[in-house]
Length: 168
Image (cartoon, rainbow, N blue to C red):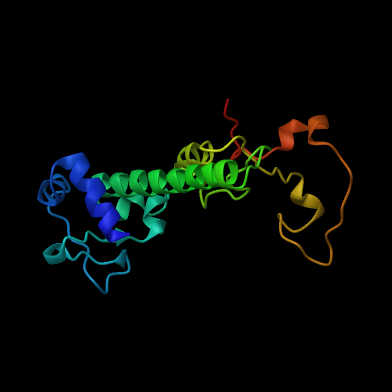
């Protein structure tokens, strides 16, 4: 992944050195709680921040430009993966139905939701779930006190979570 990131940064900035300069010379060192993979500039391998720093609660702890580049790179990688898988299903397996990238959603829609949806749009459709009126359960989780009712969200869309956004 670091090699792919290095190639991506070189295309964007012209060289790894220029990317590093654009980030203000910020280095990711081993042992830091902010670092998932440390920088190894001598071997042409830029590191990665922990994903938490891409959320609204973590953004202030990292270099904004470097975080933005990491988010863009990872989003493009994910979208490319979905596109490649859809192509495989169509061309290699002959599948003719609608292809869904994933039914999963990002850890935080506030900062990552648009990127998540952009990646998912490499396929034919999006799938998002809306769990509403969690007062009948325990906040969306499953417990012995939860029960099912066959109610339509269309009867009370105001209870739909604000985190859910629709795309056209």
